[in-house]
Length: 376
Image (cartoon, rainbow, N blue to C red; front, side, top):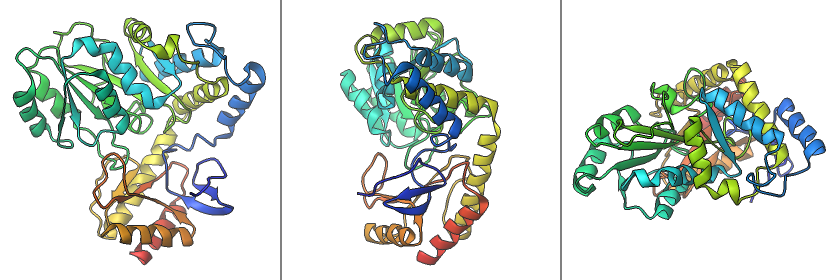
């Protein structure tokens, strides 16, 4: 397996060689940002590696509380809950609201963390075709018992395909079901979509009152969780919301009273990254420009790619053997892209996943396009 020997960014070092890097999830380039790294180093010296206890004990270090404060400000909410594992975000959120919903409806391409959360809840769970509101409506009619309260579970932005969940259409389908809801794991949308970078819900104008609906008859509730390890440049899970909702979420979760609190250096880095994102909205503007350049170039090569600002492009080029060849030849030319043979949402033959960052230059993107053209 290849070994990454530098921070993720536009250029990395893998097994002793430099590559243009179009892999992973560091969309804003913050994981290698000098100020983010400095914050982690200073916190290590001051607080040690971690508190060695749960947050319910003596684990609330200043960096941990700073993440929650910064995250609440970023999302425009009263409070936030920060914990050590982004993978657990959907499970933590579902645990907090599970008594409000009787059956779960899961997009077939949802991330494995979302599927795990649904399975572990013990609730009846049914899948519907990817981003297909019509199929969701049919599943609701066929599967939901009379008076049942459905919860749709989905990624906001799908991690390999780069597609966006049609949340407005889902809301239309759910209006007739009292007490229904949509749980959005927006790990790959937050920091990327929306004028303030607040993600898929902001992109669709649905962020108001997120994680705050306590009345099961108050209409379609939207529930949001995210991971700090992608565009947000840190690490761990984050759930923003009303103060009351966050208190309920903490009390329902062993991630507050059982698990060790997030490491102090990671928390300090996460807080600083959130601060930088708010202070420099041009990060997203640069990212969107790079996404547009790459997608325009790929269309010129004959690929049918969307025009959203999502920095994930999924290409299927022949069979698995051919795509492995393309990946290998690009690596020989000093360019890293990822062939995914098995992951949430990939085709049976797999696919090429390309990720573009705010830190890529126009010249680096053109180099990818021209070299991809040469190896097709």
